[in-house]
Image 1 (cartoon, rainbow, N blue to C red):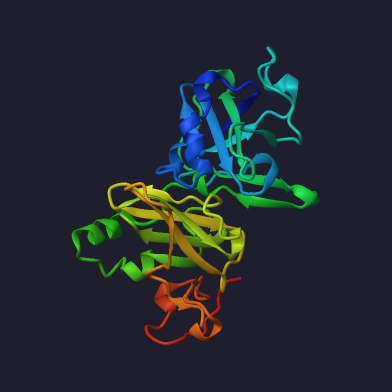
Image 2 (spheres, rainbow, N blue to C red):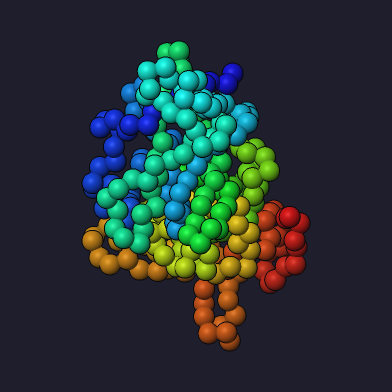
Amino acid sequence: NILRLRQVLEVPDSCRVSDEDLRLLGSAAHPSPRRVLGPQVIGELLVIRCWVSGAEALSLRPCASGPGRPGFALASSAADADAEGSGGALPQPGCARMARVAGLPEGCQWLFEAVFAAKQGGAVPQGDLDFELEVEYGGGASAKLSDPYSLLPLLPEEGLKAWARGAPSEEHPPAAMFGARHMELLERRPGLWGTRFAVWAPHAKSVSVVGDFNCWDGRAHPMCKRDDFGVWELFVSVWDLRGKKYAYQVTPANGGPPVVKTDPFGSEFVDPVDGGHDAKVPHCSDFDRAAWGGWFAWAGAP
C-alpha cells in the first residue's frame, strides 16, 4: 500500500535537532549519526534529515516501494496538502523541498530536513524508506543521490556475532564483510550501486570515511555504529569509487584528536613507489570471485 503524506512546513519544536547534535555533526565527532539523520518518527510525524556535503539546496522524491520497503507519496499541491495550511505546495509534483537547518559552523551547513504527516489520520511509515535526493550545488551543478542514512544496517547479524565470538564464520568471512566493497544492493534496492565501507573500531567515539571523493573531509561521511559489535559501516551510492584512495578518520573515545587510519582490511593499495600507503577501493565487486593472494583483474560491475 502507498501511504500519502503531506508536508508540514513549520518544524515543530519537538522535531528540532539539538544544539549538541549539531555540534557533533559539525566537528566530525557524532557517535550515532543514524539517531539524527535519515527518517525519524517523532510522535505522529515523519522527519527526514539529510546530510550532503557541499549542498546548497535539497529536494526529496519518493521512489517505488519494494520488498520490505513501505511506499509513500507526497501531496502535490497546497490544496491537496492541507486545507488548513499546515502543508504547502511542492517545487515539482511528488517532490518536497527540504529546509536547511541553522546552527552549523560556516563551511559545513549541510543538514537539511523535511517534516511530514500522514493524510486522513494514518500512521507515518517506518523502516527502510526509499527516496531520491535532488541536490543543487554552488555554481549551478546538480546531482541525484541516494541517502545513506535511510538504509537499515547492512552487514549480516550472523557474521558480526561470529566475529564478536572470535570464531569468524565461513559463510560471512571477515574479508567479505570489512573493508571497501563496490557492490549492488541487490536484495535491498535492486539497481542501486555504490561502495560499502565497514571497519571494526570498538573504542572509537566516531568514525568517518575520508578519501579523494570528499576532499578528505571527516565531516562529509560520518559512519554508523553497530553498537553490539563495535563495527562502523556506511554505503556511499552513485559514485563509482573503484580505484579511489580512502581511509578512516577515527575520533578516540578518550577525547584525543582525530587520527586518519589505513583500512586494515583494504585489498588494494597505492604502490609505495608512488609515495603512499593509502588503501584504494578495489575494482572487484564480488569477494567470492576474487582470488586470494596477488592481483586479480575482474571487472564485472557496470
